[in-house]
Picture: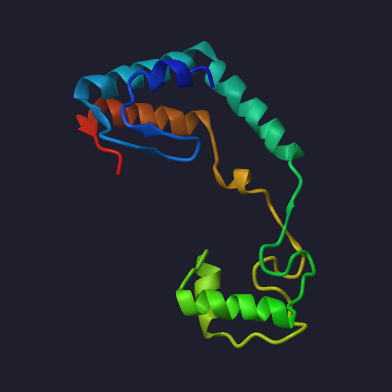
Length: 149
């Protein structure tokens, strides 16, 4: 989105594609970023970006399931992976957490993909809308500054 370049000047700290850490923004910079976002909304660029992003997401193929590698059902190897994750508590979702109490069996439908063998692309897990940007701009105007943890 066009807002990234002007907004990045306001951010301090380490910025990567997936996370931003640092000291956040003070009151004046928060309001300045709110102004940048509002200009993007008012210009129509925010809505245009939302449409482009939605079209791009629609073209992304599903990915193979992390557990069953596309089989849709569990094998001894998949059950071993689940058991290893249980032992180290590397739980990726609420569904997986509740699966801790379940005893998996070979041939059973995969609990992650529900037997389909595939999952939606991860990018679809991060929604974007003009309304969200407007809400964030409102937060920035009234927060008095914030810290990114």
